[in-house]
Image 1 (tube, rainbow, N blue to C red):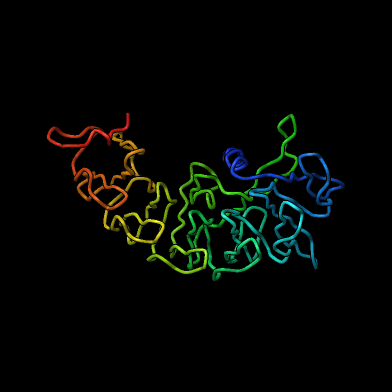
Image 2 (cartoon, rainbow, N blue to C red; image 1 turned 60 degrees about the horizontal axis):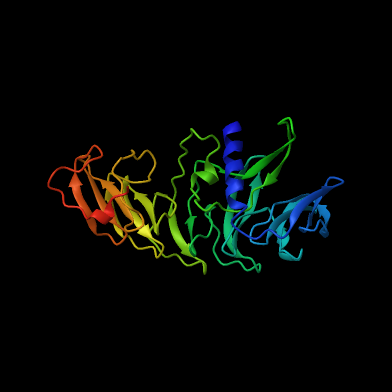
Length: 310
């Protein structure tokens, strides 16, 4: 579990700089509220928990009718999403993932997620898994998975390193990865296979369905179906067809020393069943055709100088 805590410490440090933080949680008599940068109480300590804020929003909880319910407040302390839900997470680009279902101490069990805007409007159907909104789209999964979705939290420790409690992680890292939702230990390789597809912020399905998916990097995300791999863009288009044995960035993909200058080209390698590699740009154009390589290109391969990463 220590590895998991270290991961969340790094994650929290990354996301705290991502948005304005006008309010800061404080504790009083076992309850939580918010203060501003001048140490003035903006929200009284009336909540069971209060997350750090991201983009001016924070998740709060309170026991209502014998059950802990979650909602969202804004930078003025006003409730923007009522405390009606079993959990709320993944605040990004003005949207959050709202959960309904059972929970234990570390994970969500047998429930579903839906996308809400921060004015409290539900914009999508209910799904077994839902990623954060990034570049106006989010991954959704309509199939029950074997792996559990983990509660993202960061331990609070004293000066001696003894855990005193924990904080909810509400924000999303700039380099979000699917494993951040499901992986507990860094050396695990969980199977989060399902029926994944992209939805937009109107809740519309905009892509084909895939068994596994990755995060968007440089406008493209790797996807897998029936053991084959490719890439799609944020419009849901298969820019690089799903027909390759392996692609850059996918689980268990080997590292290669051959790199290109990302300032000029967004190039990704794909592997065929012979183990040869080819490099394809973000428009689906082959930049270097299939070849065997140990980090160098064979003599005779013509490559533009602007492609090299020095």
